[in-house]
Image 1: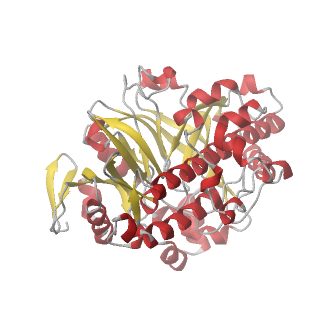
Image 2: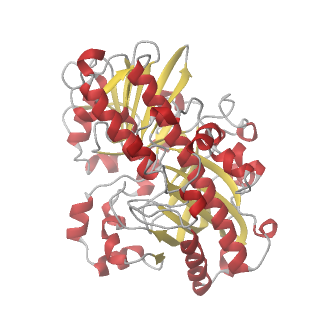
Length: 477
């Protein structure tokens, strides 16, 4: 255990370094702690704690690993009146997020050949890989102004989804305040990737509900043992990446003028009320709405693929949206008596039962938080407990890497990858390019999820098992 980590509570450690003005908390189980080597990620949490107006604690989630500026699995809250916003603390792929569709399809009815057909039908509709653009010309030229104003709702009105989908998307699938004028020409030119999943850890996955861990909640969520589900994990693609790059450079260049010199460029920041701060939030909201729209369009095409291959109507198949959660985002939220800007980088919001920010359909339960594992390993659905306020209502967003992409490509052969994913069917242009996504390059998802469960912050609802996955190659985590 790094000597600067001191046990504070069940699976919660304080990190004491330098002259940090606020507390730093890291959530690790004994198993994760025994293998923990992410000292650079801890230093990144410390650097974040030094930014003006940051409110403690700065938090490292169980999936923490080194990122750009703030680590992946990092949560940083800043006072909304006197604090800062940092593009790097949000991340490159703004609103990289995940949504889960439930079905009425027993997994036993879908043999391997049928699964392969389903993945192929999805692949024809949803390009996968870095740089890939939409297969539909009209989507490559979609109105950014309409997306800024409506997010996912714009495309639902255009026929790409169901009216009830919108209530089951974080923030209704549309952050307020998005403004195309706050986005550079270079960023706008990269907004041709709707209905695509990119590369890195992004995917469309078909699997089965392997275990129901809380019967009552699972039933209310439509999660039934041994029925199929679909996970969709992607974000704002090149648009979000360019916005983060542009504003990180701008905030760094204007640091002296704004009085917000950060310890490292990856945490370049600006006062929230400043022109730079407000423009970034407008641009970030646009990218977030683009990502919500992206996942909505993919949902539409996934539904189309299932209807085509299984030759049954949607109503019979289910294909109902359970929820869509955002990662890599900054939001104005009230915690206690204070308004804060909560940066979640590789972290997921999990509002508990009774919280007014929940959609009406989840007010009594808390909304589902969806935690995908690595390719070939389990994923989870959890809900936050009444104690989740300790993390600003945040949970981990996935398993978290233990091996860099470069090292994984060097370490694993094609045969290693196939052995690690077992019988999972993979649809990809060339599986050799997916070695950096091998399951052993990631932490044990079961141990990661158990960390917050044991700490009393979450309750597990269901464990999901992948059967087939559509993946794109390229570095885009």
